[in-house]
Length: 345
Image 1 (cartoon, rainbow, N blue to C red):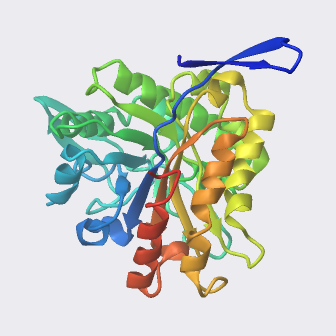
Image 2: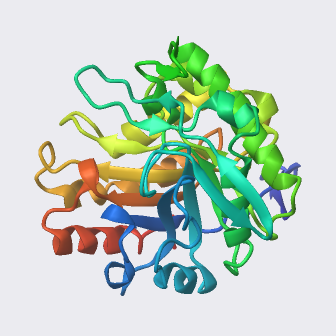
């Protein structure tokens, strides 16, 4: 570790010496996501974009790099840091029935998803492969298929398991007719995520592969429950998402909220992990000038990284949903300007 020594002398000839170790941190990676997992190549042109978020369901037969996806391998091989969100949530498959397929000469049959998540009243509850199904080994075929594809990708990724566990569990979950409350769903998810990470690591992964667990980061108790030390010892990043959806929201306040909970509530292993912001955005309805809010993000990240606690190392703007840039060109110009500013350079 680099070290600096400073000696001062007063008028009387007396001296004092202080020694301090320091590190030179690399720039934060500015990143992006385009709605629908669409090709972002044109949007990235001319900007200091170096990170990308993508979403895949393990039900999809084309997890890596994605169906007819030719651009993701180009970005990955050109040095983009790819955050691949792998979900038990079911989408991207022709039906929600059982699947039978062969991976590297081994046949698998995976049953239909047995769990519902995101059980907000008055909405359609998405289906997902259940945590019990995972722990029983019934989803091993899905993992084997994804791993086989990943090994041919040509570059390592961060595998983020789930998009937002807190969003998935906020109104409870149901698996095979049994209802689980938020806290119980979190406990079951931790067990399932642990199983999946162990499964992958036991079978040989491309060098440089990392793992994280997905969280919206909006509930303190859920955040603590889903980041126990035993799980964090197997993971490489902390992760949460950040959105400005109220006129009172500042960049510093929004990025700080979950970090403060981490520092206060999590253990030393968790706090040793860098932070990946898989999604951040500012909603047009509350902030008509999205660019003005975006312009405040670099200073907020720089301040937080100068404080105690885990360092934010990637921030990927979510150009979809709450974060949709309107007009797009103006929003992209603001992003390019932000990512050309310290701590992104």
